[in-house]
Image (tube, rainbow, N blue to C red; front, side, top):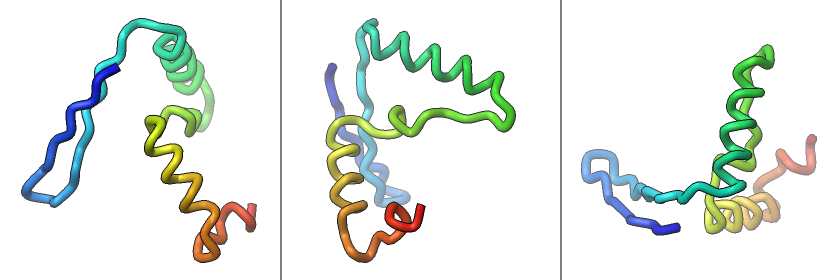
Amino acid sequence: MTHSPMFHAATGVRLHQQAVTPSQAVSSLADDVLAGLFHHPRRLPPKHFYDAEGSRLFDRICDTPEYYLTRAE
């Protein structure tokens, strides 16, 4: 897997493109997308929202006292 960072000057957002090689993860994503399209309401498991670094950062955010949503669920 390769990452190529990009900076979007108009919005100030840093974007990451990720090249994925065919693997079990890709199959899992395809299966989850297909299943989610047939579900009402449509859904996609959040495990596909973040790469490893994004997941690590999200976990750290959830552990902060200011982020009460996890504790409120």
